[in-house]
Amino acid sequence: DQQVKQNSPSLSVQEGRISILNCDYTNSMFDYFLWYKKYPAEGPTFLISISSIKDKNEDGRFTVFLNKSAKHLSLHIVPSQPGDSAVYFCAASGGDGNNRLAFGKGNQVVVIP
Amino acid sequence: NAGVTQTPKFQVLKTGQSMTLQCAQDMNHEYMSWYRQDPGMGLRLIHYSVGAGITDQGEVPNGYNVSRSTTEDFPLRLLSAAPSQTSVYFCASRNVGVSNQPQHFGDGTRLSIL
Image (tube, rainbow over all chains, first blue to last red; front, side, top):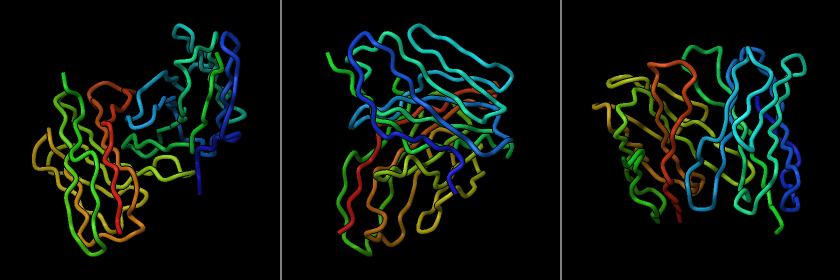
């Protein structure tokens, strides 16, 4: 049973516009959430994270929003750049004492120049 | 700083063969883990280790063995390869000394079982 869900598997956006990726989770014990970015033939690279005690974390063009009551988080990329074209994975951890990560299935983002 | 290094990058096996996927990290991270990535499935945890001498099962451990004799290395063994184990395998590590640290991933091993 998937604890982290990413719907809308692919997203196309014009360069300079905003990309919004959504993620839902079911386990209320999760207390740490991350977004990873993955290019073909490479491993996932850490992008941004948020702790459950916050509702927003910003790092340059990337902002993650957390709505604990809805068990929902989102990643905003603005402005989108062609180099942002990649697969983005949402991940979550917490509650089991071992900090194991549960991943979503990923969203393919294509930024059109 | 090499980070997490996985070898080999590609491998083709026949059903029933055994092999070991190597993973090494030079960041002195206590926590190491193995994932497999299949189309439409995201990353699924196979095995993980919280330190030398300690390993535990993840979400999909069947058909795989691991050991952790040193902090740096965390090999994944396929005892008798099956076509269902065709996948891309990623090793990751993280520092557990500080809370909420992200995992660092290697570039993966692409494995095909014929």
